[in-house]
Image (tube, rainbow, N blue to C red; front, side, top):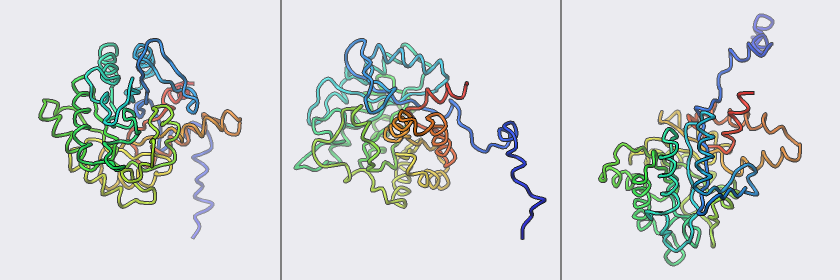
Length: 325
């Protein structure tokens, strides 16, 4: 039975102020985390070819970029390090003077109000580009856990506010939680990459982080894209092991997973608007095929609407500037 002409939903769409008052989902600086890449050296700001507007920063330039985030009201950054040298066990990942350890100390001294999240993985630091220790061509789960725990502890000692393991090894959240607690860092939250898929959208990131696998792929440890129930099992395990925030990565092709995770677990949910999602919009906008601002905001709104409480996105700075226009 039709309620027309009494019911006319268009009445509430008639003007911008009515649309603002009835809008169900909004994006603000409070929702955003800005990823940054840090390298050794001085006065380095290398623009990433496949990610226009994003850079590999040396620590001194990283501090300047972090101050910009604070000025824009963006609450946090997540750091990815590119080491000076790589080896089979990713030694710089857990070295006291590693690039991330240096960067965290410098940021907490210079901009203590900025939340500093550190990505915990080995792929940027290994000469083979995989996220763990290799033996006979296979990634060893339990041996890798030992190194991830060392890496997490070194980040905590440097002053990291949040530890974010992205490796997808079984049991890593519990292992990291135990090591942090045993060493007096029980107050540091873990943001777990809980449902991280073996996605084709990571290509530009691998250029930025110099972390492309030298053989094979990561499908034996990252999740198979067709699977949804498995994602819920992965999230449940991470929560049981002590995760404080759970993440779905990528975001745009996995909005259904974000929604299911939020509804089932009622935990803080992060979603990573990954490099390929960013690069597609930037490339199409450069060709004048789409309007960058409108499309980016629509994408980020869809991620928030799906249930994400926080969004890791390379658009973070642009979003705040757009919202202030």
